[in-house]
Image 1 (cartoon, rainbow, N blue to C red):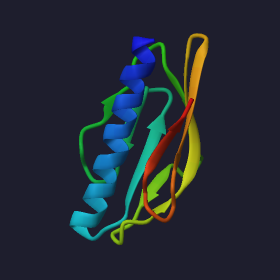
Image 2: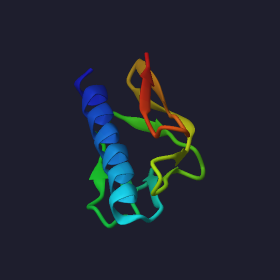
Image 3: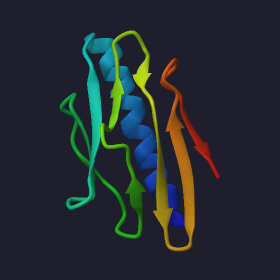
Length: 101
């Protein structure tokens, strides 16, 4: 359970920072997932964030993209840990991250 909580907090942090970076820098920011390195990567230049080894992500091919006007290229993903999973999505109009149990 703690791996899922850590992964969820890390994911929320990276996506929230990417949205803020896009707005503050007036530039599009993309967040991608590298399964081989187990890292979330932001095109804004922030350090990569590593997920716990027990967690895996289902991630949209295009990643999540945030725009300077506060909108996003929305999408759906999921965090999976042993025996558990939680879906999330990014609302395209508001860039809000919503987790679904």
